[in-house]
Every structure is written in C-alpha cells, then in structure tokens.
Length: 484
Image (cartoon, rainbow, N blue to C red; front, side, top):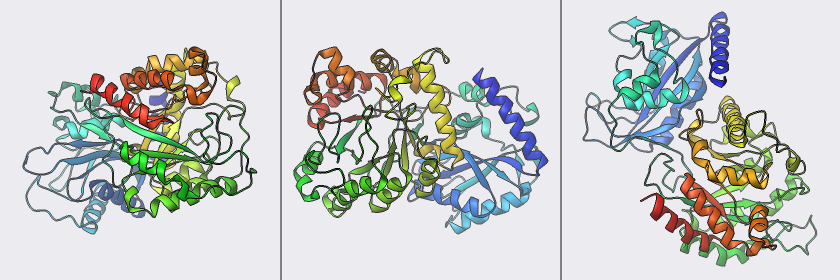
C-alpha cells in the first residue's frame, strides 16, 4: 500500500513539474581526491546557486574504482533535482561546477576531485556526441544503481528501454567483494559509520547530562542548585573526559534538558547556559579533537548555537516535530542529525502507545520514521547525514521496547530506511528496572548490558550509554561475536 501511494504521489508531482516547465533530473555525484565528502557537499551547494534545486539525495557509498583500478576509492551518490534548464544547459552548468571545484582531467575514468553526470532527465532519451540520456552505463555500474535504488528502486528506465526496474538491474549484477556500504559522517576527525559493513565496530555514545533532574541520577549539575542557575565549572569534568579517551569513546552526547517521561521543559536560554560552557571548554582542549560532540536538544536555536560552538551532531528526540525550525536549521548547519522516534512530547508520550493502525510497533516506528526522513530531506538535509533511533521507552510500553530490541534487524531492512545507521539507547531505562527489579537507575548496569548486547546483535551502529567503561567491554565482546 505504501509503495502504491508513493508512486501515486510521484506521478502527481511529475505532472505538477511539467505544468510549471520544471524538469525532474537525476544527477550522479562522485569524488576520490582530497576531502571527498566536502567536495560532494560543495558541489550540491554550487548546484543550488545555479538554479538546480536538490529535492533529495541517496546515501553516499564508498566504492572501489572501476575501469582504472589503480586509484583511491570513491564516494558515490545520486541526487534528485528540479531545474528549468534544458539538458545541454544543465550539462554546461555541471561542467562549470566541476571546473569551479578544481577538477583536472588526466586520464579517462581516472582520479577526479568531483564528477557530475546527468543520469536521467524527465523521460527524455538523447543521443548526441556531447550527451547521451539515459546515461549509457547505468545498468553495469553498481556504484550508480545502489544510490538510484535509494530513490526510485521500482521505476523503469525512460520509454521502458529496459523491462527491468532499477532494483532488478542491481540484483542482476554479480555481487562485488566487499559490497559497497553507505557512509555517514560523524565529525571531520573520525572515520564515518559504514552501516552495511558486516565487520564494522559499534560506536559508543557516552551520555553527559548537564541537568539537575536526569531520570538516571547522573545529572552533572547539582540538584541543590536552582533551575535558573548557570551550571558547573567545566574544568571539573576533566577526569570524566580523560576517561572517555581511555575507553576510546567516539561520541559524547551533551544534554541540557531532561526528556524523561513527564519532565518539565526548560527554555532554550537555560539549556544554552547549561551546555555551551562545556562544549567550548572541550573544543579548547586539543586532546579531545577526535571526540565527536552531539547536542541532545529539540530546540533549533540551541542546536544552532551548539554547532557554532563546536558540536558535530544534533540529536533530536522528536525528529523535528517539536520545533518547526529544527530540520531547516540542521540543513543550513550541514551537520549530521539523529532522528529519534517519539510521539507527542515527554509530558504526553506515555499515553501514545497504540500502533494498531500500522499493525504493530515495528511497522509503526518504520512508517513514522520514514516520514521524518522524507521531511528532513524536503528541508534540505542530505540522506548521508541522517541517523535513526527507534526511541526505546519513548511512546513505547515495556513489551514494545523489548519487541524493538528483538526485531531491530527488520527496521534496518525496512524499505526507505535501509542503509541508514541506527542509534539505540536503552541504558538504565525503567523497563530494565521493572524486569530486573532494580529500583535505582544507576544500579541497572547488568540489565543495560543485556540490552546493549541485544542492540549489537540486531545491528545497532551506535549504542548510547551512561556506564561507558562497562558498556565498552560489553560492546567489544558483542562485536567479537556478531561483527567478526
């Protein structure tokens, strides 16, 4: 049903485009010289300034070179865009972008800082010396078909020049070894997440709650301080920060507002007073340069200020539903974002656990997160910048949280979500306490360890935890079992 509705919407959008003389195009993006990610993102910005509006992008895939093999690996992707340019005007603009970004052609199919190609232009077929549309080598190139299938897997080539969909063409290719994996950047100093690599290592996201009212009693601000008091001296955090380095933690998730059930919301100015001194302090210390900083907030103004101060990732428990400016703000910031599944607000979410309309909680979370991914892309966030979180304990009963841990692999493979990395945060949650009969959140380490292990077995790319020393050991062992 979802695919039928999606195709109907595509057909309607196509009709609107033709009525307004706007053309739907698919462009290939590639780079294997220098900072490949930065080059592709710069190309996307250049396209926008030349009247080529990117509607959505595929994931970026790291692929081995084809034809000329003695060269570095590529980042490859595809974008769907709209333009009023004719095919040849579009081609000229792509060549100008390549030149503006410093492409120097040496040998055919050789190294290139940026490579932009027209794959599809409406349903047009063109056979000219300068331009052939559809691109003649789509069907033989896994590095093109993979990203196309992120966007239009069930579509046929123009004029039914092939009777196979793009997904069928991809499935017909001999498997490559290793298969291409999407990449998701965390920070400039860290290697990207590769969510489809079977040997990837699980990343740890350590929780830093700069609040007096954390559910897990780990808030680093003293509860004795009044709620409007600016917060602790960041230098007192040095022992904890050095512990992170010793445990090889990848990500530090900094929060200035509790999102526990029924928590009272605090205004952005107080949230900023709590988190900005710590972010600035960490970024002033070179020894922490390899630590990606995530800001746990649902306020766009807090996200913008935190990224300006040095944060790399926005972690929004509402996936942009609690602040209409959040997704456009993240798009402008150009950073990575965690879109978590939640219904309602922290004050109302416990009463919003009925997923019968979708069939069950897995289908419900998948459908609702897919809608948020589409909203993020419509706001200008690139697919390769998106991470997902199923929201353990957020608008979920105990049984539903367990079902997600049990069936995380199904979410990873859900159409429209496949290839995106998953963050799972079950640490010290109340359902663990009920099952293990451990009342104090800070004493739920053993139950958390089981949940973390289940998360890794289900395919989590990042686990969010309070007890990073102990959970670091759990992750290492779980990786040795399931990611060898």
